[in-house]
Structures are given as structure tokens and as C-alpha cells.
Length: 124
Image (cartoon, rainbow, N blue to C red; front, side, top):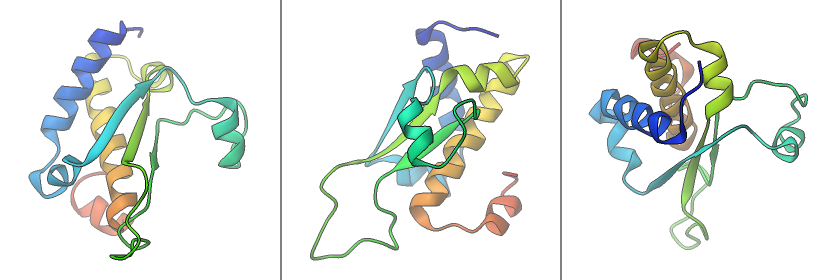
């Protein structure tokens, strides 16, 4: 599957609307950016092999790391990687679901949500 950037952005928007309000409300002060693929440098910094199909990544300070006296210098960002997501999906519906799962997992890194709670919410 290969979409234009504009079509993929629409899939991301629909996927975000599907996220439960309990999680989605935390996206208000977060930047969500779509990139074609993760850079080799990012994969290296994360300790991943150069061909690893990374779907998304959270960049920022989690709530657990924050201090009221030292706020973060930059906005929190979720990067969504279009090509790896497209490569693993056969339909638009499947792609939308995978983007939703990816965004939720990245928000979970920000919030400190456990894997068990994500499974309870249906995000495995």
C-alpha cells in the first residue's frame, strides 16, 4: 500500500479521532508529525538495526520525568513513520487501526500507562 502524504495525513486524523477521550485529551499540547521513515541516526540512537520497521516514537519528557521548577524546553512530539506502517497493512481500515495503536502507545510513554492497561483498552 502506498498513499500520498495528504492521504496518509487524513488516515492519521481519522485514527486520532478513534482514540478514547481518556487518552486523546493528552494530545492537546503534543505535536504529531508524519515522516516517511525513521532516520538511520534515530535507529542507531535507539539501539535498533538499520532495517528495523519502527512505526512511531515519542520524543519528549514523560510526566514521570518532569519537574514543576524545570519545565521541558521543547514540545512533546510523536513521530509517525508512513512507509513502515504502509508496508505492514493491506487496507485503509487496517492502516487506520495501526496508526491508532501506534499513537496510543506513544502517548502511553508520555503518561506512564502500563502495558497491562493498554491491553485492557484493547491496544496490544
